[in-house]
Length: 182
Image (cartoon, rainbow, N blue to C red):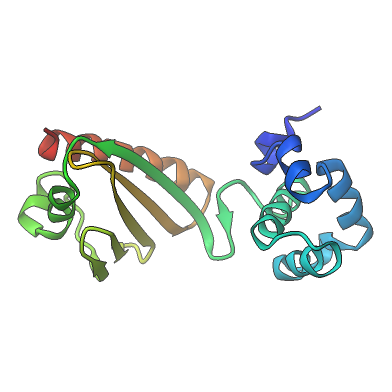
């Protein structure tokens, strides 16, 4: 029997506690409703309207169902695949933000050239990567001397690209930490 949490991303106990049914229950309900042939949005709407599943859990159950039925792969979204990576670095948020925004500093740890679409100081960056994929960077202060930095790299072409990007960002974070870490 395959590990349901590995497939769906959510344990049987968690989904039952929040929605009233375990995965087997939801699979039976959705199979009977013809969800294998429904678009993602319609499945989520069915869960909300007919079964009163809370909005966030509608998405979780829908994605879990799609993964279990082979309709969606791990890390796959509507616009492609998504890789995420995060690290807590011993540096204040302003130092990390400047390391991204200042081209001279950035070249020391990230040689890639990209297009910055939007920046919210010490909070977020929205970037178009040279290959036209999207990168979102989030800065979360953890006290005065530490910051969690998280990257979500979207519109990747496949699961192999997810693995490659996760390794890339992990290596870049190590270099960034060495540059600005205290």
